[in-house]
Image (cartoon, rainbow, N blue to C red; front, side, top):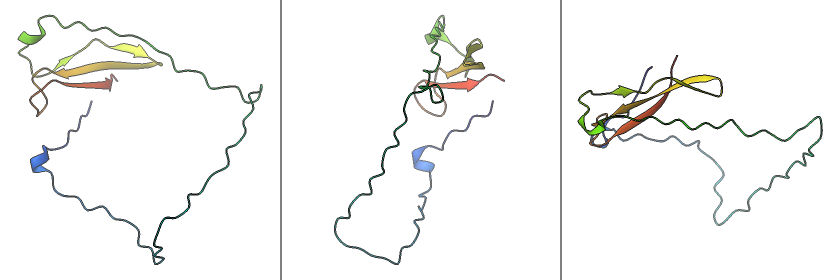
Length: 106
């Protein structure tokens, strides 16, 4: 699993956001464009979308405050046909508080 974390705020460089140039300068408020909603009737050809599967995963970490490892992984669990696991950094991942990540196991 590859994890990327941004550098601390005091080490980040100011990034310049590029915006396309427009030759047309219009002053004052402009009307919003309103898109017409498509009427999608629920039929056999167009059934309503199904809710995604839900699952409750409970992970108990015994003696959490006494963990001396830098990072700690949960057991692998399956949701939506994918294998997942949780990764925690009890003392933080370059921060001074708990860091927690959800990652694909494979």
